[in-house]
Image 1 (cartoon, rainbow, N blue to C red):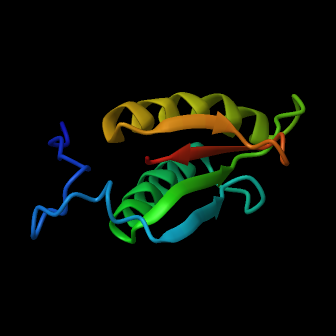
Image 2 (image 1 turned 45 degrees about the vertical axis):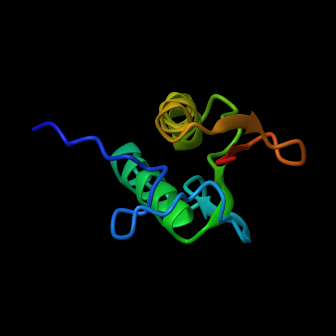
Image 3 (image 1 turned 60 degrees about the horizontal axis):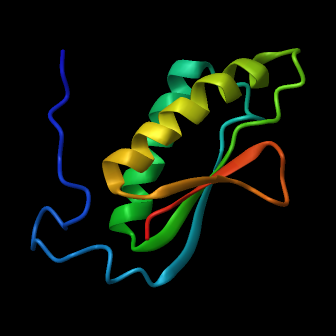
Length: 110
């Protein structure tokens, strides 16, 4: 089943530009420390991206773990970064590594 693409640069109700109205700090989500499966982590990241956009946050910080090669965080990290890159392309944002946490990336929307 294909999910229809939506324009994430405008409010779906009033068509106001979301790019010009960011008023909040980063929205943060942690998918590394709760024992999430990749499927759950993927869903949580996508939902958090929508929440951050429509909540007028300046970006989304995803804590995915630094992937030491053991455990589930390695798998989540290798899957999360391509997902975040795709979300950056879809939203016109920019993905950067978190300078303070090697196990996190920040998706800036503007």
